[in-house]
Length: 102
Image (cartoon, rainbow, N blue to C red):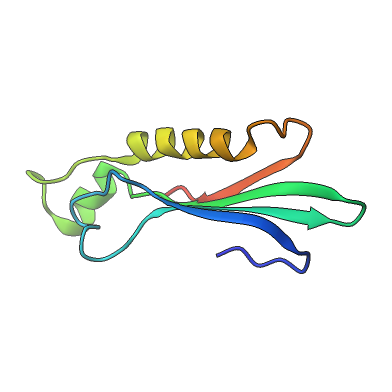
């Protein structure tokens, strides 16, 4: 969720199409983008996201050695592609990227 005291001019949610096997029934991980209008007609793009945990953490927590997989690299690639799409043509605007990297 992105909350702003300034107007949100545009926003979009992108669900990661590569879910971890344990996320399929529990969560919808992805990235949210908001283009916030600042005073003086300036804008800033803000992104927040939630990545899947790394394989070692999943194995330790869930004891599912045979089924554990790491989708973080794919999610990171999807995050970068989404950010590039959202800020295309807006190279002079600042960008903030924050989230749960797990």
